[in-house]
Every structure is written in C-alpha cells, then in structure tokens.
Length: 497
Image (cartoon, rainbow, N blue to C red; front, side, top):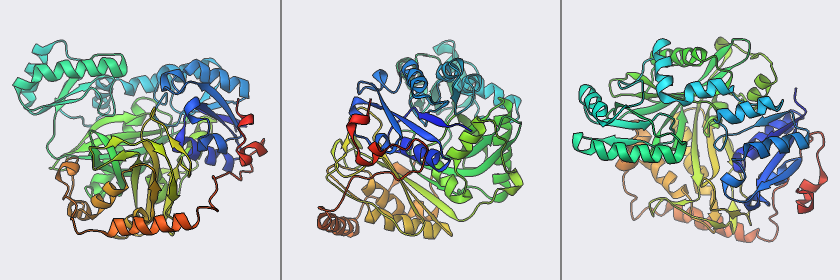
C-alpha cells in the first residue's frame, strides 16, 4: 500500500480524497495555485506545494510540474480527482514514465474511450447498443447531410474528443446543419485541440442514466448500480439520484451487464462510469464512458456503503476487488444536489466573492462534501461547483423530504448559489413523480410568488449564524495520518511551499 499520495486537484474533491487517505493512514500531499493558497484542501493536507499562477493552464494543468512536485514530496502515486488532468492519457503516461502510480485507468484505456467514435465502434463489437449515427469522424458537410437524412432529424453534432456538452449542437433541420457544423468544429478545436465531429440521432425526451463500474488488474469487473442524471443544464448535471425511476429490475440487470461488458472490452481498470441514454420506449444506448471518478460518486457510496476513493487506491496498489457482483447490496434511495456559486435567477451567471456567513446542514442521512469555510474567497478561475449535498433515506419520498429540509438549513452568505434552484426543483411535480427527462429544466414550474418557506429558512439560518459569529472558526483536520503536521491545525502559511 502507498505511504504518500499527491492529489492533483483542488476544492471539495481534493478534501474528499484527503479524508479517505487519512482513514487509510496514507499521507496526503496537496497542490495549490496562488488563488488557492488559503483553500480548505491545503489546510487539510499533510504537505502542500505551490504549483503556479491562478489560471489552470499555469497551475493544475501543468502535468510535468505535478510530477516534479510528487517526486520532491516523496509521493508514490497521484490521484487526479475529476476535471483538469483526470482523463488526460498523456498525463497518465507521464506518471507511469516517472515511476509514479496514476490512480485511474491506463493511458491506452483513456484513449480508447476518450475518442467517442472509436468508443462507439468498440461498443458495437462488445454488443452494447449505441445511438444510431456515425462511427467515424465526418469527412465533410455533404457526408453530414447524407447521414442526417438517413437517420432522420433532429440530430446531434458531437465532438469526437468531447465531453461535458462542449462541441455539441442540436440540429432540427437541414437548414441549420452547416452553421451547426462550423460552430461544433470550432468549439471542439478550442476545447479539445481536435475539430473532428460526428453525428448521431437526437432522441426526444430521453433520460440520462449511468452505471458505476469498478475493475481490478486481476480481471474482475463489477457494477455498483445506476445513477439518474437527467436534471441538467446545457448537458451539465445538477441533481443526481439512485435508484432511477426509469428502470425496472429486468432493465437494470440488462444495463448493468452491458456496463460490465463495456469496461471489459477496453481492458479497463479502476473506477469508471458507463453513461447511457434511455428513450421513451425504454430502449437504452451507450453514450460515453467517463474514465475517472464522477462528481456524483457519493450517491453510489450512500446506497452501497462502499468508499470509491479507497477502492480506487487499493486497485491502483494492485489489490483484487474484495467483493463479487452477487455480494453487493443496495439499500434505500440517495440524492445529490450540486451547490455552485451561480445565480439561478440570472441565467446561472457565476457569483464570486467572500463567504461572509455559513450554516451547514446536518442530521440523519445527510452528507456534505465541501471546500468552503466562512471567510473563504470563491475564485473566478475555476468551475463554480463549491459543494455537494447528499442525502440517504429508506425510500425516494423520504429522501426528497430530507433533501428539502437540508437545503432549507443550508445558508451561504456573500455570494449567490444554486440552493434556491434545488428547492424549486425538488418541489416540482415532475421531479416528485419521477416522470422527468433531460428537458426538465425547461419545463420546470415557475416558483410561486407566495412561497416564502425558503426565505424564512434562510432568515432563521442567518440569525443563528450571526448569533455564533464570534465563536465560529475555520475548519481544521484531526487526522492521524503518518507525517501529520501541526502546521495544518494552525493554518500557518509558512509551511506552504
């Protein structure tokens, strides 16, 4: 087992990985840009190293710098978290060449699933259904038009090396095709350095359902059930839940087996996610594979009782999976709400600034993964995700009620957040009934002018925060990890280098 791991990330996911490291008696090394010098993950780690200026291209995306810091710190492995270099095959190779273990899949596996057209071909060969469309990049606009006519409009133009909705355009008819192709190619080139695009059928009112997989280096692959991710804005997930209301037991078994076949087809190891699209006729199709830990992984952890970060670390250390598919048990229902520094009432515009007050929710079945504290300055340079609120309950109705209660307790002052959006979404009849699709955001019932419950809850939380203003302190860690430094308990910057 590793003695020391470098976390090549920031924010709430870095804090979450550090916690698992400390429970395993593994020392955690943090890295930080100058914008993150006082960030929570820096204070929780056993060591922390500066890696550059605030823009991610000058800090968190500098693979050679990260490897150099890992060597200097004496780390044996690097955990990439998600985002930044987590799905960068060249970075995985760079780690291997430096004698460091990359806690994730191999470079070839990342490449195999990172190229969406190649992934489609691989899935067809593995008898995993894919959405009708092309399995090669489009040669020109003429080919795009021919394919679109053959499968029928509307269609999606998608970046071959894409993800997260970048390089993607919906085309309703032939008149929109040329402009959509130009825009998608330009965005794909800018985001991924490759303008290649392909076309696939755009399904009406689909649901986005993904399956978590784990695979060790000894040939064992299992799935850990599904997560419903259909509440989205511009292909970015906002709320995730498990189990999915769209699946019955037979469909769940079929999709789980398909997810395992997909991972086996590329010789996958470590944690990954097979994403499917489900149409109105309950047919499912492979969408893509995320070759990393997902933002929404706590939903699976709450239902299975497993720690996915610990599983990643053990797999990377060469250990076999300690369980089989038949031994995995799923209980209750879990929901996650992504809390972002955005104004949901002003087109989700980013909201940066100082956290002036903070009252966090708690109670039975409530988990909060956060990178915030009172006095923290939310930077402008990175993704606006600042926390994830997750709940577990015996059934879905109770989970919804618990999440609404927890959201009402959650008060963040000084910036706008997506908490009001989540309160409205969880009260919407479509969500409550489970009859929703990826169009949910556009169909949401507008908030009633007489609904003051969230405002009352926020006012109460503000009063309580003010009452305790003089006693609140910046969070510190009490880890028993080896090499645990007293500097992090005091938050002394002198120990940062």
